[in-house]
Length: 194
Image (cartoon, rainbow, N blue to C red; front, side):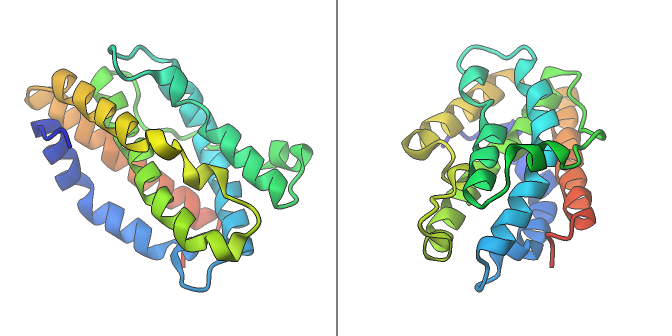
């Protein structure tokens, strides 16, 4: 793993929020299944789709490869279709308008840290939920598949090189905190937390 002051700062700033949100997800219950994943995917697409569109369209340093990272909302659409939610129903799902800050590169790295980091947890959930969701393979939770580690390290490497100095570290940490807090509020309003 690529260790850096930026990674340490983001981990420290978001640790409590991360643990709290993860522990409260209904999808994390031992008995979670299709209904919980469907509710989670419907809520997640409404938050992720508008954020992802702005985040990955912004300028990024070499190595981040935003074009390889911008399809997560599409994966949620695939998952919802497999669970019986048609395109018209997906289009009617509410979309978030209150997004975390994305004006600076440091802020974008803070937001990307949360979104891309969730792919690590999603991989674990995909394995745990495989039986309950069979034959569906939860495309969103499988994320980048075999490329997961490589993409995560690439993001951390670019972040280590780009997010340096007190001001940038603070902006990245504040954006990561805002991302977790915003997602938590979004999930609470959609009743996917326990």
